[in-house]
Amino acid sequence: MNTKILKIIRSKFKKKKTVISSWSQISNPNLVEILCDKNFDCLTFDFEHGLFNISDLPNLLRVAEINKKASLVRLPNKNIEICRQVLDAGVDGIIIPNIKNEVELKKIIKINLLPPKGKRGVGFSRSNKFGKEFKKYINSKAQPLIIAMIEDIEAIKNLRKILQVENLDGILIGPYDLSASMGIPGKFENREFKKNINLIKSECKNYKISYGLHLIDPNYSKLKKLIKEGYNFVPYSTDTFIINNAVKNLFRK
Image (cartoon, rainbow, N blue to C red; front, side, top):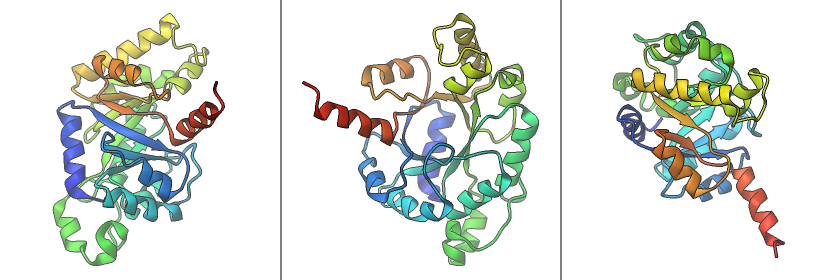
């Protein structure tokens, strides 16, 4: 965990300043290094849909640290063990998938925070340089950035309670899963879907919580539009999508 970089990113979340993240699905340090562009504030590693193992993470994090980028992991599930492992590896924050109510969010946050705020296990790991900076790490009281994904209609019903959970830094809307849970997969122009998106944005503003949306299409005009609409956390495209587009353009007349 890079406490200086984490402090900068958390400050941006609190002040509702724009945070743009890359999104990696391929476990390759060279590719991650290419994504360390100055316009990206942080790097996200997608453990839910990407091709990652825990053993891959240290080398990917070294690339992020060398390039002074914050690192986030989108967890594959809400399993407590995977949370502990990625934090011990040294990530700066976690994105928790498919949060449906405040009870499960509180439980996950509790297990990810160091005592006295939480019940995270304390031991030698890469996050404290395997004990070399153990005291410094514990005394810093640095806590990971925590982002909850809102991607189910049940979460909409419990939204206000979710947004009031202590130590939540922000939420990320999962439009595909949310629309699927409504029985209208991928129909983002649907009136009810738009109504729910607007509700999320409105409640986040009321509770002063940062909110984000993953923009898959690498279109700068769309990125600016999202920022104008108030989204201050925007994961921008994916490494796989960018490569696919580049390959298509090789043969475009």
